[in-house]
Image 1 (cartoon, rainbow, N blue to C red):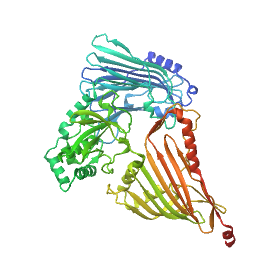
Image 2: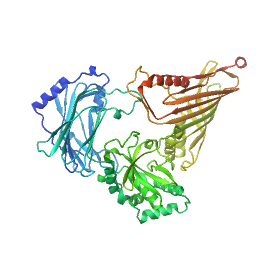
Image 3: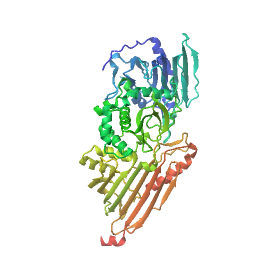
Image 4: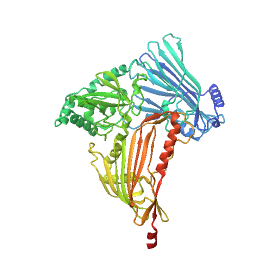
Length: 634
């Protein structure tokens, strides 16, 4: 949709200011790794007594190179159309030669951020004449008509909104004296200036910093968001206030009505135990409720009635969690809604309370004296399991209206298993014929099942061949067997009889292949190439990979070199490889275990040695040679 938004006319004072900004900006040579330099990053917020706010944002950015041009030429300003509006004040580019090119009102677009049912909107426009050395500048106003949590305001501000340098960043918030503004600062020691507003009814807080250095990026560092200087403010007094607010929103939605009660009774009529009842209800919500993102007005936070979700058979995470809670309660099982920040395994209750802290909703149930965490949006997940993104996350469980923080148990490496078993026979041309079985647990199994369940038989074969492409180039499956994909309680297994035309390398009288099943995997490079380390080493997900390979070389060949057993241990995990020979058959077993860990930078040298040792294992070859007698016969 094209909006005729009035944009302020350019004055000579404006042009002079832009030229002064560009003249003071750093040169590309000063920051060779940066794409841009932010010259101004300013926000002025006026908070009203009801918690709504007016936010004026201004950005001025120097484009340092082509990467900066690609990153910054298209501007997208997100907002929630149900309670926010955005108006562009001005947008223009100052070219290196001093010419200013403005965005015209007819070039500003406003519309849905994506296809779906939500109110996520975006105001967008293209900056004109963007090239290395230019300056782009724009200013806009965001009007919040209401606060989702009436009477309260919350906001977060990064003093470095990316990895590149910032010359001047400032946040100014004017808050009514009746609202108490709590503040939490991370990775910075910036202190605000605090003064009483001229009307004596408000307090003005100003945080300001200049010359913020670029953020250095290192492999396997903790999330960059955790390293940036960040300010969080909130007038919400406690997490209990958040629980009270959500309970009020969800109370009517989660109450059982005759439709929900009847469905719960129907689903559990043949169940003998609480676990059987909970399992039947969980699988019903998974199977019958289509997940869609629905964020319409207050329903960005408020779930729809369970009976409505039951009828329309679609909903978002909070709708599905609410339906699950309602059905379980109707079946006599204790169940609670759970709010969380998926994929964020860091302490949550130490943060300032606000609804913004959560992006996902699941269910906690007490079944047969055991706690179950149930995420119905993972629609191929088995009962009792939960996706990795929910694991290790500190969550807010709302138990009868009370806010209780608990942590979803982390997965052990064995609960994130990737298992490969291959048995192949080689011929003298390096081709291999044999059987391969793939199976696993946790997210690996979820990924396999999610892909297979939506495919036809022919598509499943092609998908399996793509998976086997890491084991050998151009696999051709002759027969394929799958366990019951629709039965989530049965471990998933993919078994095939497969031919690999180019499994081993032929070099004269030699056959060479890697001492591991995955012959065609790309070369693995160490992430630790620098001599020193600034940040801790962070590994977010546990994993256990077990690979077993039985390979039989052709008649007339014998082994010239067989790698020795090798193992390694570190704070990040462990690995081992064993090799056994029985005549022409060689059995190679590999186990690699990754742990969720945050390791101090002081242990970097030891981790480099660990990875280097692993790489030696990963790259070692088995060498077989044609026997002299066989050469004569040929």
